[in-house]
Length: 429
Image (cartoon, rainbow, N blue to C red; front, side, top):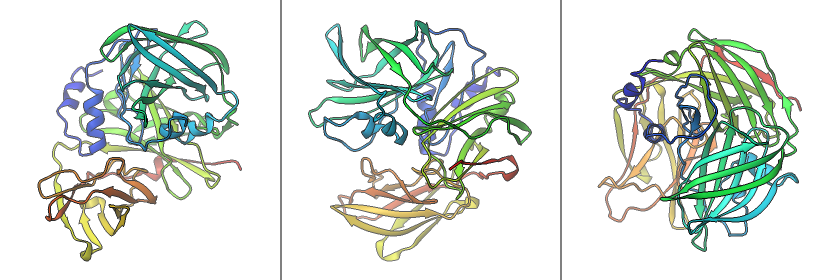
């Protein structure tokens, strides 16, 4: 692997708000995990709601992801409040385990609530007196240490406690039934030994194999579908790319992937990770479960260019001068269509005219709302949410002064989906 690749990445200015944050977080010094030896390591940058995972040394390390989701009553399961749609389904399965075990070390307590394994990820929820980082995790399945990537989400409860959810994505499938042992060695600044054990049975997920063995090529890189499975709680897609890390992730571009339904709408990504050597790389993607309306799926890899400079574009927002069109260069325009007041806050509706599909939360693009002093007006939990294909709304607060509201975006680098590089399959119904 090119030893200078990390240095090159550090100097790149990625023109996407979410991806900038992911790179900054992902390139922080890593923590070691006691795990078995692995193949030569790689670094992955993945879009959508997926974790930005670093595979370093012998294990997978993912940064903690902050949650900006709505508060719920304390008696609700954290799976239903900060979990994705798949986990919301899985937690109601009879095989999900309600542990409710309080573990304490060196005066710091942690309550483990629910544990489940849905075939693609192992997840457990917890409650803390205050939000503190939990690390590192040491996980054994039937007495054997496993490799995994992880991500953490959570929220404060009305009583002031913090309720969180840790998702663990094993690098290899786990048995349908197993004994789980989890050890935690540090919470916040306190070192200790927090340990819990439980028996786990995979949730009933009605697995459907969509296809395996299909191949295609993108920019000289061939790829093969090694696993494509749909369940009640997730879609798992494993792809083997015949190419080196320098070809897939370098200072000029990075390989990305969309999973699209028959209407061209993106299926939200939950997580992605990968490993590889000098000849090939295996990416493992997890997507939200499919609705009954989905009858076909298209695997669409593409390259996202890195740009060292991005042109910022600003426009004044005036409600009586809508629609407002803001050019993003050759990738099309952003069009603000209307503003509505909802319970003392403002909902801004906008869409992109680009033929390129953006994600459910406007991933791989950006739009900020500021006052004339540059203060961010987007409300907490007011990030863009989809109202249709490339159509969104976000919530923002009224500025404290009487100045103009300023919208800011950037001129996007050219991104496109190559139909010849796509693989399309039908979803059995």
